[in-house]
Length: 569
Ligand SMILES: [Zn+2]
Image 1 (tube, rainbow, N blue to C red):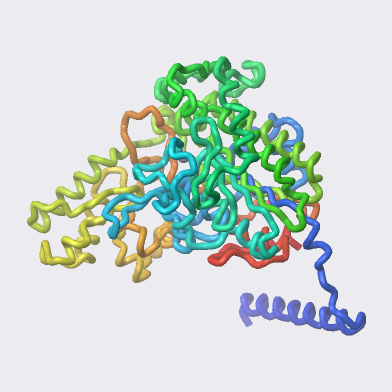
Image 2 (cartoon, rainbow, N blue to C red):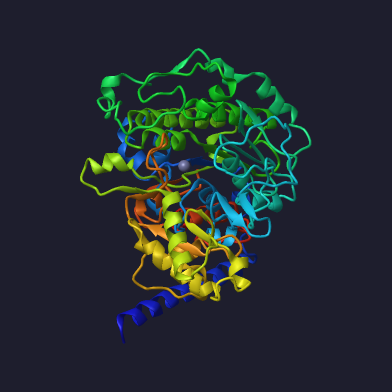
């Protein structure tokens, strides 16, 4: 008998023994024991997302954090130090959707920030919805889209979220609220049943999907004009400069900037143009402070955690993402920002403890994606980092296709990383006498000839499941594939290669299949959660099914993650 079989048998025997035990217990007491009492203990699920927090960062700064923030999760929570996304496009929208739905883009449908819609004949933003105009038409859209559609809703999200399931399980009694500096950071976790609010010009707004007019409690916060109280302030270091790891590298030539926010600290926030002032706040820790203030206001005014059922609150903090893009994850700005994230967490946890009691709250923290160091900073350390200029890449592949198929017609409709979208109608109408599969294969071949591209594959091959066994990232390509939204060719850049402009004021990038982009922290805290520091490999898709298990409700409609059994029993 081989070892595998013995193992299997012994597991089966254990399962059988366990089954008999259950039967025996039920018989001796007369009735099976129900666990209803434990399920009602959690009165509030707080799902925190730190946009762009790579998994190593809390570990690096662990000893430097204060009390009550990350330390609460490290010392008294269940902390996973080896969590990776298993989809290819590691960006804000797919990441938030996975955190909320417990599954991959192939099933929740949010494959990118935006994709090409062949029926509409234009690029579509993941959370746009022309049927749901903004409540205040003067609101501005938070960055992340080239679409001009201003309406917003979760219409493109195909799965229920864990917040939706909490509302459904309570027959509508539970409240689900989602807040963020970014629209997609609120809309996707808010799901179909929740209410999402995001920052626009220093105020929190939403769309008619949620309400005809902003609720009174939201207007109350907006009328306080909290964002305006920063006008005469500056972003300064939280602590003594000498205590910072990066105190000597504040002025690196390759760091970016935003408008009046230069390369070094302190950064005065004052700006004559209002729109620039509010937009610049997003690029600083003030972004998170506004989200924190609004989240606390929501908890207090709505009495979250004090209602009949279990309420759900998603808080997505975006400043880490803006700071990482602008000055790099290795910058003094990023170091100071993370210390401030820790203080904001401590403030939020202590506020909730006073209002609800931490013993009644399930806290879950993770991130939507990681990030790479700025390419130019890695070059200095002998890592061959590069940038692929998207326009030139697209032009190269397009030119080779035209040459190959002897046509003057542009065969590429658009390139939205990681997908090349072909002119499907022209090809289907016999424009070049070759089928779409042939053109996809050719485009993939030319894409792979371009310097910095590791791999490219046509959608027909992905759909047919033709997996080259030797590419570890193939599963991530498949997990990212949605037939209506994914393009004709999926392009994978080499390690430390990023698509984008060569010269940019936002030089930090993420979005690849590589582990610096897929790596995020995952942590749980609740009296019912078994504390511990876990090194086994898990994924953020395991969060929603684990929350469901802890609450004793069903998981989301497209759920595919696993329950983290070692903490949920
Ligand atoms: Zn980002």
